Length: 245
Ligand code: PGA
Image (cartoon, rainbow, N blue to C red):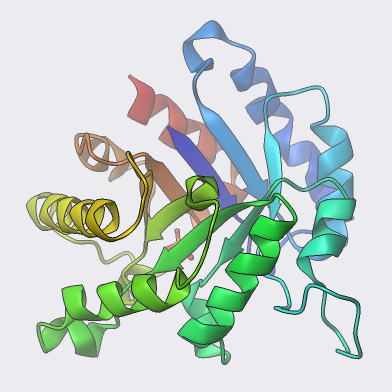
């Protein structure tokens, strides 16, 4: 099971010690197969890499520029630079970045340049509320996946994250039965159209210690992408414990 902590634009140089208890958790045999990935802001990526060096926790970035080379892109960072500081994962296609101008095509380029650097990609997609209301959820997701993965090789280094946009940071969630149907459809679509035997599909959107037990009943899920609750170590640990038990 994957537990990806997406810290978004939160966290300072002092935040590093908040992960001590999570590090201790990963040393318990019960959590041997738990894959924890912290995705802090760029400014503290390297600090997190150093802190977790001798642990099973991995570090990821939250986005990158699509150009694989250095270039005149003020304020940007590319996959090569992220790899250089020791991060192993990268979140791409997050709705907050789609909102800021990332098109499916740009996301496709970012995925390619990240895989080229041997980063594992956490590829996010999901429908907006208006699309859901028009019954376009599956159509929207298929398009995002199809263009996002166009001509992409090394598909096995991609982890998929279904995040309904209307669920992110809102406390609103899908009914379990609906989510299960959605995940199963996404999985079949990926298996059928891309050469991935057993794609890992995570869920993201308002995951918290209260709703995790119900989410974790969905056996098709390969883990969770957690925003708000992941910044609080107590909540994050609670989520992990409850989904493993
Ligand atoms: P949330 O964020 O858990 O705060 O809803 C999830 C995400 O944006 O990945």
